[in-house]
Image (cartoon, one colour):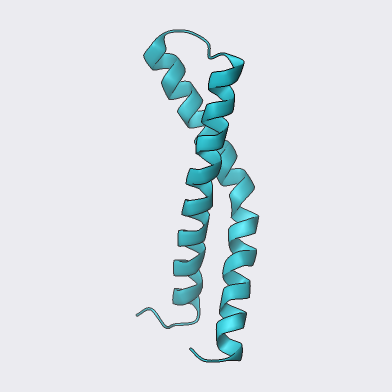
Length: 80
């Protein structure tokens, strides 16, 4: 990739990652809260929920960026 193709690719990667981040972070958060509540056998407190939300945010950001990069790479047929 060179020049304009690089910036176009990066723009699409960022755009798709941004679009995927919110639903992905909500899904990861809900699943992790349910898992932790089941493991502990009680409802989580506000501090624990905030910690799970930060954790979900980071996991969702990484997942969204990785998926977006691979998807766009494959879409422009440079990955295979």
